[in-house]
Image (cartoon, one colour):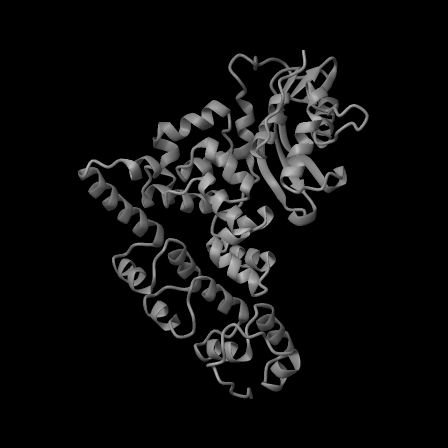
Length: 412
């Protein structure tokens, strides 16, 4: 039987010691969870009285701007904690969210519909400022991926970059142009998360400047955004002792996008050459295809290894002057320079001819990323150079571009 505690205790007070929680009737394991989210006993009791018995669920409601005194209104509107977080992210309070929900609209659809009306009013007054900043995307297109099939402006950038895998399809389906997708991806956002920002008329530069000004470390930004918090809310949460790891937990709870599929649909794209025009002439595979396959896999495994003696990357075509680019990318994103902390794995490959192969690969960074693949299903090329299989220079430099680093011109 828990001891009742006055729920009027200030919200900014610190959690009591574990002994006090146990004395109030909490199980030690439950108490530790509530305490990790910086709840006091009084605040925990207030949530429990509303039927929220787990600290993590209460934290998710609070990330959505909901407290024990307002939670019932959200429930009455048929909105759970995950959906409330999305309404909050799109700028709706309970009254406006409830009204839109009653119309059968979700957060994204309601927002895009409202902005369409705003653009219509603006255009009637001769203003094009908003139109120029907001993607021509509707809620239904976002949810159905219609842009991939129908918007040549979006598709053109991906075709131009020869980025045509399933990941590219997910970005294009959100109405995000390829150039922006590179930056959003480097920031660590998923297509859905970036898409919601884009629908609000916010570009990568806007977001980066906002979070930089707030003083949030680069490596944490994606998790705070994914949790549905603004930069100011993230600052407040950090000041109260909530960590980016906890933000990542909230982010995972509301993650609704399917992960990259490791099936034949990705690898089937390797059947048709997709490199720069004129660079891939189909022909017979290498005589010893098994040995060539092993050599390609080895080259990709070593594509991030710098020769300390001369600063080159031997596994990359024309890699004599690429070491500095890789080091700059690591420094820019606070990635450990130790080669053992990163790995590249070939997920599939197909030989176009006896001197070129199409490759699908994944990149994993250890340390702060906990060994989780940063890039999966990425397409690239391997080429035979003086009898040795190497990673194509354009494949390596495209990876550097994602990190915001431009490769130097090839040495002649």
